Amino acid sequence: MPNGSANRRFVKGSPFNAPAGPVPSAEQYAPGDQVTHDRYGLGRVVTVEDNIALVVDFGSQLMRIKIPCAKMTKL
Image 1 (spheres, one colour):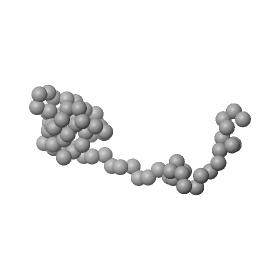
Image 2 (cartoon, rainbow, N blue to C red):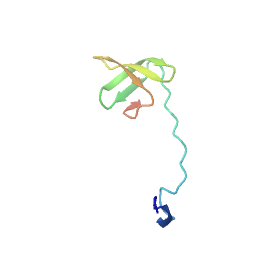
Image 3 (tube, one colour):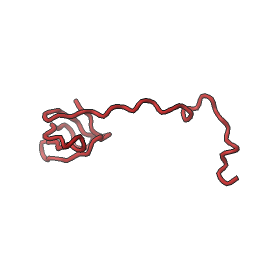
Image 4 (cartoon, rainbow, N blue to C red):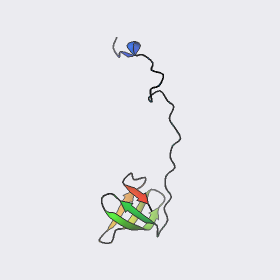
């Protein structure tokens, strides 16, 4: 058997058999929102670029961050 899928057994309680849950909605950002980033710390959104990226002022530097970003949360 080339792929070995015939020998696999179905486990009723396996989390891999469950259908995918609802997709969490992406956070909506607006200029002036406070955010925190795991690497850069606390910052404030300066501009939103068509819900594709944000320009965030972290005090010492301005960073362009693509969204969604797992390392950044809205406060």
